[in-house]
Image (cartoon, rainbow, N blue to C red; front, top):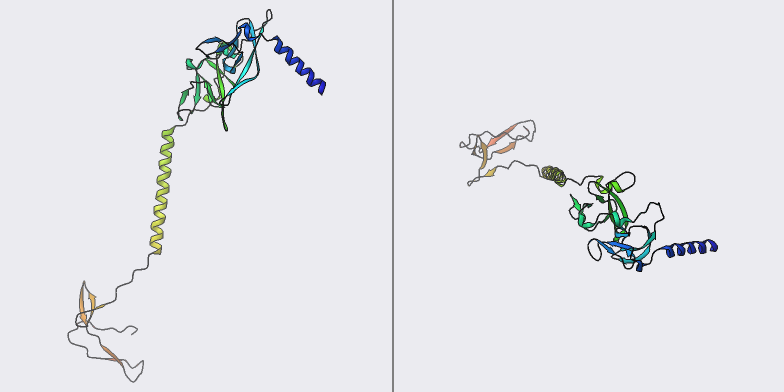
Length: 267
């Protein structure tokens, strides 16, 4: 295993040795430090921005710089062989942020498709405008669990295979108006249920209404309600005859002022 490791290291060193040095001026960086194409004097650039001059093929190297969680990789430019297809790198064909082709779903506006002004989006959120194919690049932003990846939008006629505009356009943004209406309906239903339950509980817990007892008048007579008005009634004295429960009763001191007969309860 030690021999294999040494062999791989030697192969990598040989490949790096084949890369043109930065002093050759064939490493390119799109958009930095100036808009457009710049000669990259340290051959270190973000993946979507790096490329090689015409006649040189691009190979991405190891991480050479980090910032805000983003990463830059070394640019390896090798002389193309005669008659060989020469890939100059993503920076030669990826649309620049200022072109307004990179798109991002849900940021900064949640319910809209946004033009991504830095071509850096969360996984699954980036996509490209019409006529461009999407390729997800390296990490361009990292903060805690939030990781952004560079968005490379290349013209469809320069990409291989199917021209997919990216995952961010696979699902339409949410309709906030419809969500708001649904939320209001649910809120009304919940409030109605709560209010209805409170009324039912109040009615169940309310004490049963009892009729008011007859009230005495100023002269001590009991006032009984009759036909919407109170009529004075003298209290009769009920006397049992011979203590015989079946012998009947007689009324004493039954004044002539009363017009209401007294019917003792239970008789």
